[in-house]
Length: 251
Image (cartoon, rainbow, N blue to C red; front, side, top):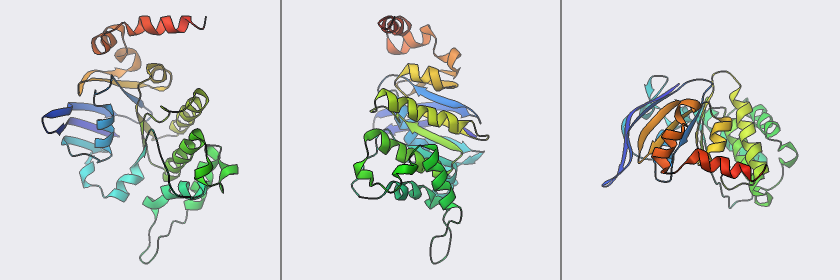
C-alpha cells in the first residue's frame, strides 16, 4: 500500500532520516520504534508531507507528491499525540471536520454520506452521548477519542499515529489502541505508529522498523526486529532484562 524508498530528511547539517526504505502492506500495523532522536516522528511528518525530503514515498505506486491534499486525505489519516483546541465546537462538529476531503460541489461543499460516517465514528469511539458537548469540556482521553473519531469519519485506508496515547492514563491508552486494532480488521487497511513503549509495540504491532540516528537497524515482523541483540545495540542496555525486572514488581 505504501512504499518508502531511500527517504532522507535534513535540517541544515543534521540528518534526521537517513536513506530509509520500508514497505507497508494491507493488514499490517507497522511500529516505528527507537530511542529519542531516532527519526520516528520526522518520518511520520514526511509521509504527511509536512517536511521536505529526498527519495520517494509511493502510495499504490504513485508518488505522494503528485496527490492533491484532498486526494491524499482520502487515503491517509493522521492522529497526533496531543490535540489542543481553543474553540467551543461540539464533538460532532469536530468529528465532522474529518469529512472535508470528501466534500464536493461548485458553489458549496456537499458530502451526501458524511452524516452516516460521522454517526458511525461517534458510535465506534463511544462518543454518541457526548456528540453535542463542547470539546472544551472533555477530559484528555475523551478529546483524543474525538480526534480519533474525526480520522475514522475521514475513512482513510492508512492510519498514521504519532504516540496517540502517550499522555493518557492506562485506561485510555488501552481504549485508544483497542479501537485502532478493531479498525484495522477491515480489509484494505494498514497502520503506521510511532511508539516509545515497546510493550505496546509488541502487544498491538505486526511489523516494526527499528531506527537509530535516522537509519534502519532492523525491520520485519516484531519477532524478527525486537530481539535482545537489536535492542541492546540501539538502546545500549539490556532491554529484555529491564522489562522482566519491571514485570517482577507485579508478581
